[in-house]
Amino acid sequence: MTDLIIHESEITRASLINRTMQNLREAWRDVADWRDGFLSTAPGPNLPEKEVEALKAQMRDCLEGRGGEVSARARAANLGRIYLSLNAKGRKRFLKLLATEFDIDRKAVEQATVNYQQAGDDAEERAKAERALRHALKPPRLRLLTQLNALPEGFHFLVDLRAELLGWRKDDPILAALERDLLSLLISWFDVGFLELRRITWDSPASLLEKMIAYEAVHPIRSWDDLKNRLSPDRRCFAFFHPRMANEPLILVQVALVNGIADNVQTLLDESAPVVATESADTAIFYSISNAHEGLSGINFGNFLIKRVVDELISEFKNLKTFATLSPIPGFRNWLDNTLKAADPDAEAELLTLAERKALATAVGTGNEPVALKTLLQAPDWHQKPELAKALKHPLQRLCARYLVKEKRDGGTAYDRVANFHLSNGSRIERINWLADTSPKGLSQSAGLMVNYLYKLNDIETNHESYRGEGKVMTSSVIRALLKG
Image 1: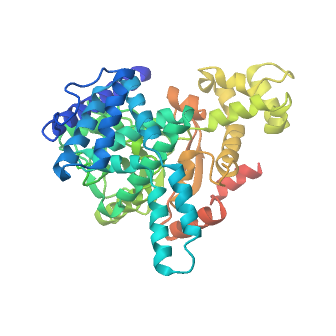
Image 2: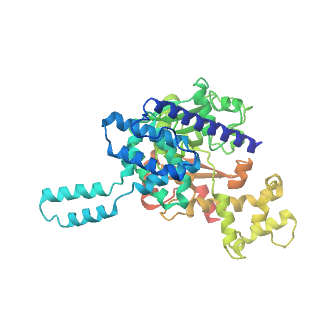
Image 3: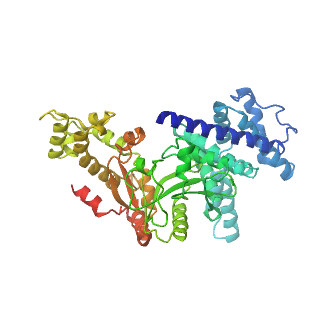
């Protein structure tokens, strides 16, 4: 059932992308001009080699800017329509052409560097040499991307274009360089001061509700009834919007108003559960934060979203005292499996205490014979066996605490991406919840564990500075006890 839900969500997302591409074609149809040396028809979907030279000439014409602003917009729109007419193979060839043929001129950079070094102490000459060097270091492809951004819906087009580049950059350093260029442009254009926070309700336009379903990345929305439950009076959903993508949510957050910190997502999302009286709720649980556009990854506006949402909730509900998450731990099982696989045969003796290994052996009835932790977790129904689940609870919680607090990336940030997000925003790790998500996804990514990150309003700035400056992870006494155990 879950696979079907995810598949339907992917179909919905794909339909939205196709609709966006069609809207772009229509938006640019009146801007584009197919005369003045442009191709009379779109190239083949694979961008055959025989048509590459003509496309290169069109890119060059765009950069030369002949004929004024109207002609420049027409040429850029024409290039955009060509890109949208191609299949994946053709689009990749298009981007490689843009990346290779319109990169920086390294001979010009070398000459500009020499001129800068020889400029001497004359301020005017030195300033002139600096400008020339900066110009030489700017690849022409940046100007072409900027022209595309100026088109109607051009910003949205470039966001989707970067999403494709993210999938291709790993195996292609040329496209990786183009992706970095595009990211730098998006960051320079993306001022969080322009972001608009909107609440999504059951009465919101159907097109927006459809996007909420498609973009939900944490807990797939199973049906319209499920969606209606998530928008009930004791729930809130907010999204950030940008003027350049006015009808597209950039990031969505779903909040449940409850009493006490929630510890189970199936209970939290139970459609048959009674609605909580909002005037009595004392806790706001952030249970899903989803980036809607992969092309905006690396542009951090999630922390602004949380702060804005907290302000909105406080202004509406004076009784709220606690702000926390019920978050997935997407990398835990993968880290644990790799740790067991990469280590020597005695790895489990280092990960598990003698008492824990004996408890596991007793639970599965092997007597004194040791049993592999990885093997136990591979059984799909291990969590439904009471004795085994009881024996696994403490070691898995303890190892998860180690993973969240101790395991770091090269830059000193938390290895788990969700943990890094919340710790960067000033939270502390409050509690690790046992069998909090027993969906197939929850079991496969974190052995059913979920974590509460607590946003204690008076400590947010201090926690943020400690984590960003020193890599210090703030934890509750419960987490510290697990680490000692």
